[in-house]
Image 1 (cartoon, rainbow, N blue to C red):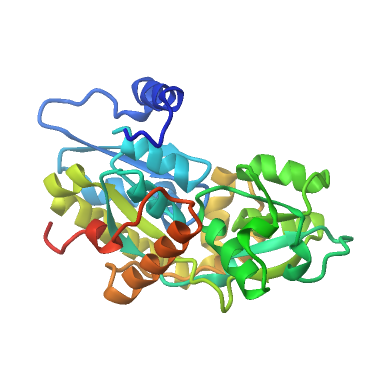
Image 2 (cartoon, rainbow, N blue to C red):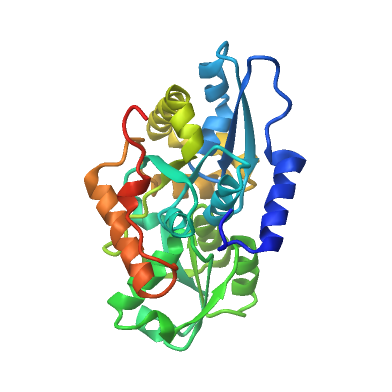
Amino acid sequence: MTAAITTGRRALLLGAAAAGLAAPALAQGERSLRIGYQKYGTLVLLKGRGALEQKLRGGGVRVSWTEFPAGPALLEAMNAGAIDFGTVGEAPPIFAQAAGAPLVYVAHEPPAPQGEAILVARDSPIRDVAELHGKKVAFNKGSNVHYLLVRALEAAGLRYADIEPATLPPADARVAFERKQVDAWVIWDPFLAAAEATTGARRLADGTGLVSNHQFYLAHERFAAANGPLVDAVVAALAETAAWVGQDIPTAARTLSPGVGIPAPFLEVAMRRQAYGVRPLDAAVAAEQQRIADTFHGLGLIPRAIRVSDAVRQTGA
């Protein structure tokens, strides 16, 4: 654990690992694969279908799953040694790498820029991102929407310092948004789709023309180095699930709905904004991540400059 996480935070994460994030006791010869997931995306569908367990059957691998509210918390748990593999958006790995976390990028999904947006209330007088000057904006610090906000402000001629950040996790941000305690909310799917459908919230901007909104799969560096074939098997299972989703989004939405507590019609809207396909990072995607890292460093949001390429898993590792 790095100094970027407080002592209390460290105790919380390590306590969580002892209380349930760690894998159950293993039989002799078994290996543990501890996966962190969020409420949405290909990984949670892989969990719901049981496809990974089927693929690994007979291989002596015990799979355990832990849900996280957002990417930063997931990577903090990975840094603490509580999980081995997980999925996050663009910004969390950059904050984690800058804090010294031993993580590696394993794979990514194609861009989905419409899957995150800046929302205002239906009756808000704000009609343009430029009108956020001096306004209170809610977002999850260190998540993919953090970079969307930075880029949208920049495109509107504003600086990050021109708004009042309200850094809140999705559930708390939604409450603040509905109570009009904040002027805008930057959020991702499926929370985005649910908010639009149930509150009538309006989009000021989404990622189109501003950000790619990739999803990334990461592993703890030591786990990836010691378990290359197992990591490859997880990626292969994800690719198969992504292909299934892309062919039948309505069924995938119905499958996912009970587990995430969001009605299938809202999920279907969100899933049609997602891109499907799982592939290793190439130089172009790594360069995009590097631009995000450089931007955050320039704003003083991360403590040091980083090289994203240093954290990309090499084929056969």
